[in-house]
Length: 335
Image (cartoon, rainbow, N blue to C red):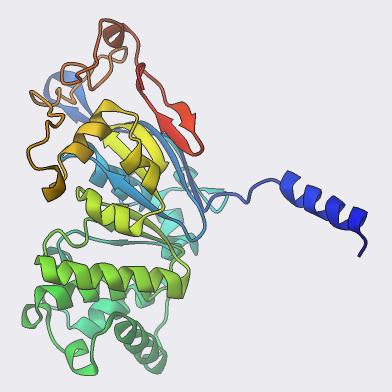
């Protein structure tokens, strides 16, 4: 191939459109009715995407809507409005019955926060892992079930002996491995992890996090990793989404978020990370508590009242996500 032909091929490659995201969320909303005809805004017009093989972190303090968003994306609860596109197919247009019968159901799996609560105490580990195979892939052949279950157990470090036990006969770390094996046994494309290590001892957390990182490389899965621990998401994730009271307030590559956070809330989260090297330094601290998520003012910034940069403009004009740099967006008038 001569030089002009090579240059033409390079130009065509640069001009080619980026591959579509595995998951694309468009203005997703989840409201819950409360007394007096009011609505609790758990998730409010959230948009995000997850690429093939990408690990995206979702962070924010308790009550910000992280777990609700995770359950919406896992199709465990129905959105009030908005769209969830998975591999180009609109999951939100399907009824729960249609989705349950679709091959797409097996391609999105979830690992829950508390492995003790999420495992059926009357099921042996083998049956807990085999259950998704029976329900989602309709596998009934005992030999095939045995092969697939033991392969998944081996990948997460569970011995044949442990596979025959009940959940109460396992340690916390072993139960966490069962939850992961149950999720990956159907070979999903997207794994949603809702604070999967928060119920574990610190030493066990590190082992499970290393296991999750190895599995992603080995199986080529995409992750949505929900956590309140910023150090964890920094280790595992390429990109981080920050939520506050049901809204996405910042999205950035992981290193950018930690070295140049644009939103005052993200800056406060990072300042709160324990760091002996910063002992004695003046840190940004937030005063007060978050506003009520019940019927919030649609024109007012959710962070107003706690924000050190807030002005009257923040009361009358809800900030939208603005581009700060390559892959970096923040919803603040003064970012």
